[in-house]
Length: 164
Image 1 (cartoon, rainbow, N blue to C red):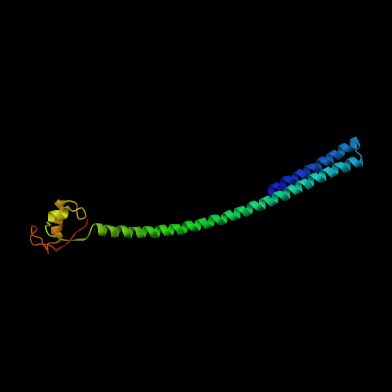
Image 2 (cartoon, rainbow, N blue to C red):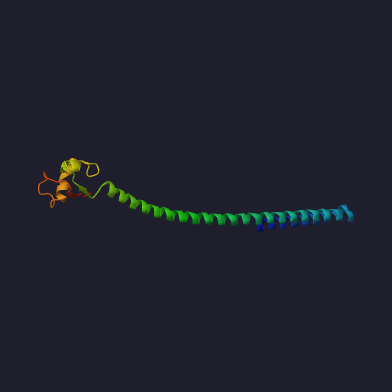
């Protein structure tokens, strides 16, 4: 805005200087008063047009500043919305972690109730226990107080399953 006004001021000053130079030339060429008046009127018209253009540009600058202000407001609104969404994501991640832990407990129980025909080998082989029959000693070690002989287990006994 200041730059535009400075340019305009320099332009008007230049026109005035040219007018003065024209005046000196006019004295040499002996311009008539009517010719001077016509030149002055032309300069005044150019000045009025420049002033009108400046006013138009000032209005456009004001419009652009309003648009920038509106966009800044919208950006702030979006930032606040993003902040709220980030909080929701954090909360949801915590919830998902809890659900995952619960699913692990359900999928891989901490205990097993013996049914007819079970043996420690077959219990350890189950995919939701250890998925490896060679891990039957882990069941035995965790339940020594309930198992006197690893070859003799009974239905309805509840064994603790140790998770790694």
